[in-house]
Length: 424
Ligand SMILES: *Cc1c(COP(=O)(O)O)cnc(C)c1O
Image 1 (tube, rainbow, N blue to C red):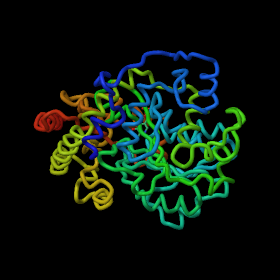
Image 2: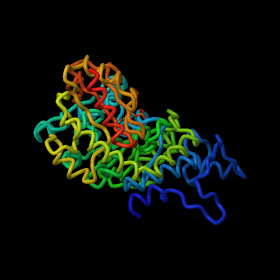
Image 3: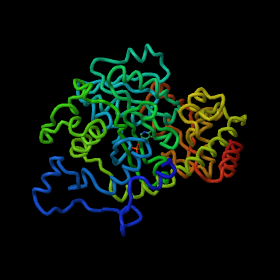
Image 4: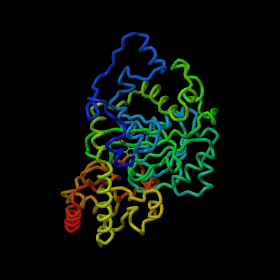
């Protein structure tokens, strides 16, 4: 199936007489005829459901659709993108371990790694995504367990050279984790470029309607854990908290990572989305391919308008031929990058805030990447916990306006920008 078809059909195939739409199994628990039947589930000897904190059929239908879209072998949904980022790394690294991350990542992820996960004893090295091969090489340590980057960084819009990062990670026997939120699998499938694990904040384009917060983790099923067993004892030695199961032996390359994340992390940390939210996410996924087309064509026109305006200091959009990441975007995102543009208004931070105050179609919201056009000043909102140096390090200028182009008529969006620029 092609991506457009998977958006509609993948993950759930009703049998004779069953509901056409995925059922919402709004139940915490599941009934069994005998304790023995249930025991097999707890031992992971049989597959099935017993408690929605770990797994639920509605969630799994939607996870299977996302796995198909990304070309992965297994996936799990989480209650937020933050939980997905956390689980994706914590499933591999614990106290005393080390992880390499690109500096060009979402501010929330940067804080999760740099502050909260450091408190758990995990060490991080942040590397410029455009650093030299030597610098990237120098970041690896004997206790490095993963490399983490973002396809198109939110909000810096830096496009990562996924192949280069994958090669470096694999040369050191560790997987590459890619946050593919902004690109979506319609724009880029990181697994095809060598990524091993893909994460999403489904809150953005996947849901696409400002309706549900959520996340997803997809396993490409290619990383050979057993070949690096010394690095990944959590996957390659018996889990005493799960009846002595060795995930990589029992579930193989295709299933070990997600099974461990479910059996250990979801069990203990409980960041499961509700079945109702997964149902809503699925509605968004059904139109993802057609929405992305419109987001990208609208954003291209808005970016070209801004570039031509004498009231705009600078415009950053990977779809503009003069952009630093234009060539790389052509390679990794041949159908267009995303609907998000960043720019600076002449007059700096103050002019940016004034401009935003005059917008009527574009609404100020701590959100991005959905059907409604919205606008944000990251330095005074989402990224306000970062210092100016940290802001610049993750590609967020203090005057940066993040403009998320929705799927309204583009003429209305441009007219709105035009009147707001006139008013300042
Ligand atoms: C929003 C976002 C996150 C965090 O997701 P939540 O659903 O808000 O928890 C992670 N990564 C990227 C790229 C994001 O845009």
